[in-house]
Length: 257
Ligand code: CAA
Image (cartoon, rainbow, N blue to C red; front, top):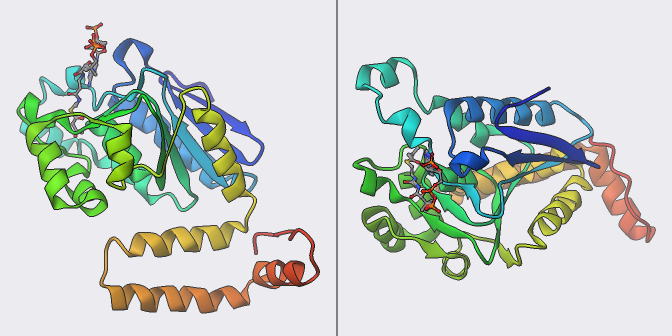
């Protein structure tokens, strides 16, 4: 499948999507989001793929939604055209997605990164929700995900001032899982993804779903959900294989069932 705005490849059991609009610092236009959804759907339905990495260039993961595409929109056109609806599908993937971020990760770029399951950043990464400077506010989940991830005070600081935060601050406040050098970013992300992909796919998917439940429900409901899924794992062959392999001191061979 030939795409205009992304590069798509596989590395073993890992899917790799590289955002590729260098002339616009990977600004996310509707075509790119459609292509990204298509690529992710392809990996979702490919039993050989257990995890995906989304990355950008060294200068920019993505500098936001495409301002030039948005600038002339009317309310009625964006409402009837369901503007930004397509973005939500990215957060609905069941297989894990890792964001490998270098350079600018702004506005919709940060919103996209937050839809991934975790962010590995290079020390050059810069994060912001600068929509306020354009006379708007974040519209692809930023006002909801950022306070859940880093707390209200810092989220308000970033959303109301539009300031940029560096990788160290982003890691300190819990937005970023790890910081690496720009040279090792892709290898680190691919190797984390390969590790995830080496485990039982249904178990990984259930673990992802359960952690995400923590963002949306009370502690007691979340713990109940966790217990239900945990107990259901004893109905899988992979639970039997994983534990048997441990006892027999060998590597497990998961069958994804
Ligand atoms: N949309 C469209 N084009 C963009 C863009 C964006 N978000 N960000 C950068 N570009 C384009 C620039 O217009 C420029 O194109 P031209 O060469 O044709 O002029 C090209 O990319 C290179 O950018 P700069 O010359 O500006 O590069 P720089 O290194 O001087 O500055 C930057 C980099 C600080 C990231 C700056 O480009 C910038 O501030 N970009 C906009 C960031 C922003 O406001 N993002 C939020 C968008 S709104 C949003 O995301 C809404 C939402 O919630 C869904």
